[in-house]
Length: 236
Ligand SMILES: [Zn+2]
Image (cartoon, rainbow, N blue to C red; front, side, top):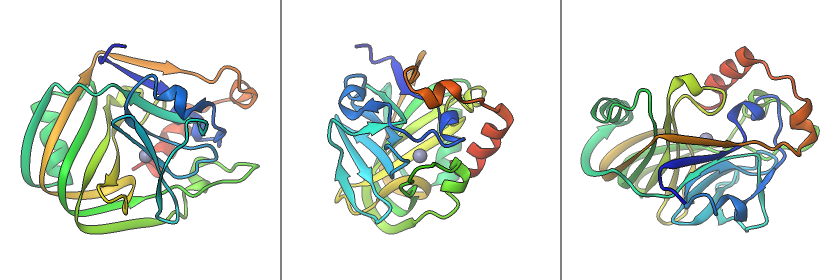
């Protein structure tokens, strides 16, 4: 398996009208990568995949390892083989994101970003588990628990994608977090780096695997404008 491909199951866009049914097992997903992010069946929390293990950050703040039989409607993975590894100190989120964009010319590139170290501050949110009939993504994420910590040791993992691919995925940065002690995790809303090692891996290939056996997916009439608006609202 090439280390030069992002493998994505589903699209961010399919979550927008509420297609939250899991359509790939964690076991199968992990054959396509050992590192990544996603969400579980029913939009049940945030998925963080590190070193071949998939974890769920739940809406009650608990973190647990995901079983191979559990399913996901959307996830992205890759085999970790960073191009660069650099140490950084005292960077705000804005400084960090701009520095990466400039230094590695990411604007039109798919890249994985992994930041391991200590953070002065971390703020996450976790999508709450939905029940059928599913609401839209925006409705489902209007009220979602947020979690914060100071002086946290852990790992940021996620991707940068060219804005051209907004809808297929999140255009720009999409980052998740897991603390080393598994006490804090989720979709990253904000962070402040104390000191950390940053690893960047650039990809020439972006592979999308679609749930073509899922009836709801086949019947959906997607609206690009609504998808763009919803992603900006629900994923940033
Ligand atoms: Zn997320």
